[in-house]
Length: 125
Image (tube, rainbow, N blue to C red):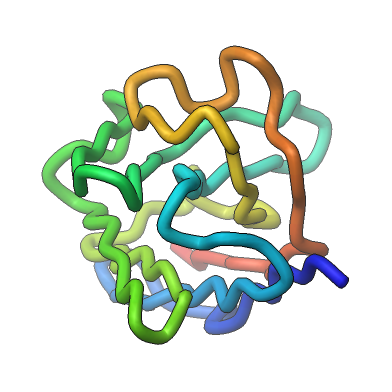
């Protein structure tokens, strides 16, 4: 059974930090790209960051560049999203998802294959 389980969300003040984790199982982790997406209330889901477990390449949406860092521990089949200098506009449910195409720059282009259930991040001003 494929599972992606997010954790690490919570309430934090603006300027603070959180680290999200995405624990994966049930598929060949090393062959996939793993992406973080978020959906704020009343808004469409957006891609935040992605990492290829094949070559370690990463990409980020412009609004989080320099503040968020994605990393992967292939031995633990876990992807992390370190979020620093959080802003109220980062408030959203954060989801991780797996892309069998495995290329960070094209993360989600052909659709993500598996999704987690999400973790809520709330940033207070």
